Image 1 (cartoon, one colour):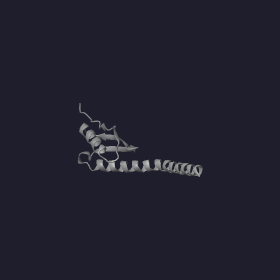
Image 2: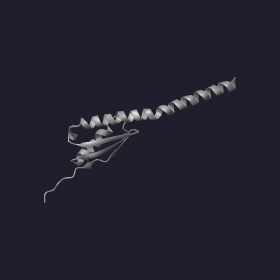
Image 3: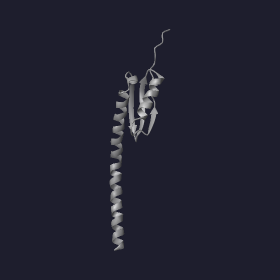
Image 4: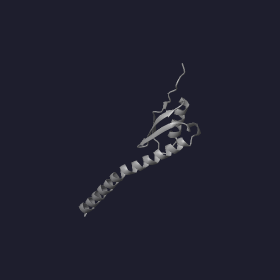
Length: 104
């Protein structure tokens, strides 16, 4: 009887682990899609970033910001806004300042 019970517990544990492993990547992808959408919405909702051209990527909750803005303050604002989004675990801020054409 003990052997049958141990075998049943082992079989149950193996099936639960296999199910969790199969659902894991799909769940992370959905979470990243939700984080991506939430960060984009937050950035678009920020008045000080209306003219900014910012790209967003999300992987396992870690967000990478790219693109260009006019000032250093806008870079800081974008990072701050993105970091406040639920689910964001880290920020890689690769936003650059737009080139300015100087008159000679």
